Image (cartoon, rainbow, N blue to C red):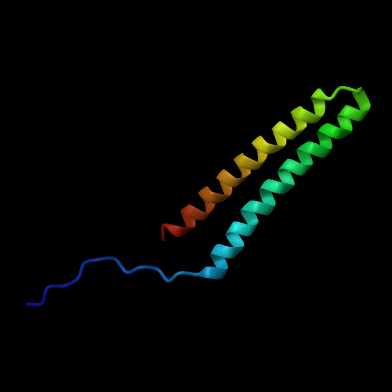
Length: 81
């Protein structure tokens, strides 16, 4: 009797897919931060309060982090096989 190797086969590394996912994460985060910044700046110009720019920037960062988390979750679900 032969002892069979029961280790699961490793999936091939796909460098282009990894490259595209990393770029998508970065672009998504930057777009959210910039959108929050510009929205906050617009409201600041209307109201004259610097608080709105800071709030918009913080909301943009939060939206960017949330969006990146969702993208990673979606990618990990597809990677399970």
